[in-house]
Image 1 (spheres, rainbow, N blue to C red):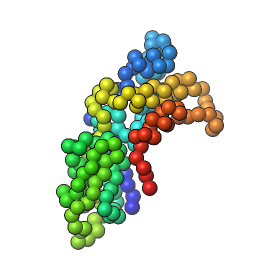
Image 2 (cartoon, one colour):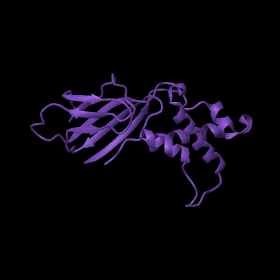
Image 3 (cartoon, one colour):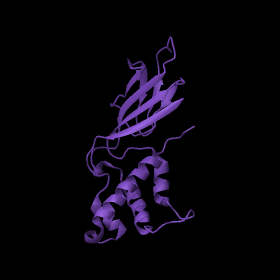
Length: 182
């Protein structure tokens, strides 16, 4: 079973407030604002990847080749609002016989009968994220982005293999949101 996951941004804003990041880095905005913006974007993407979340609203597309069916399927990226039902297709044909469980760790429970033949491709599309603006992101995650950006800003020189690459705060907060993978 091979799986691909893609993200397409829906929200167009930054997943951080630049002034807050600059204050957290204690950096002069006039000297480093472009660099800080790039670092903050990198920190936000690292947090999203680590915690398996979307900070701002994104369209998530999961494609599974030769799916193996169990009673449920955990979606790879959250959070998903309860009223944002995903779309599911099997070999291009819509499928609606499932129960959707939203939240930080969204999943689909199959409620219908299994199929006459095993489909070769399943596609699930859904919108995930905390909202459309940086102010919609929970405060602990916003702070984790700042802490990761500070680590990246302070460690701009080449790091060796033993140097810290993730902020302990980002790892601790991200772990709260991360789903369990088996």
